[in-house]
Image 1 (tube, rainbow, N blue to C red):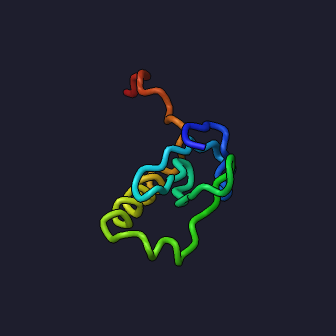
Image 2 (cartoon, rainbow, N blue to C red; image 1 turned 90 degrees about the horizontal axis):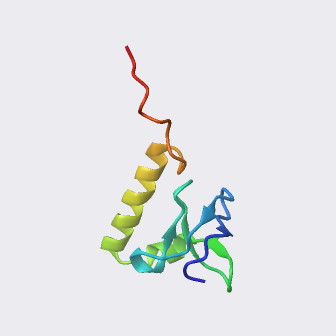
Length: 86
């Protein structure tokens, strides 16, 4: 499934590029959900027990990524900055 761009996030339906990073987990860039492969072309949210088995440093990385995504609010680019404000 690696490299697919059309796998929707099961939480928000945002398209997710499934290229697992830390610990084989993909983080949705829209809602911050931790996702794992579910079959050949789907993703599913990671269960709490699965998340608890992830090594501490990897958990920390995933938590930081999710927080940054949620603080930003969305994966879509913001407004263009080329307008002059007086």
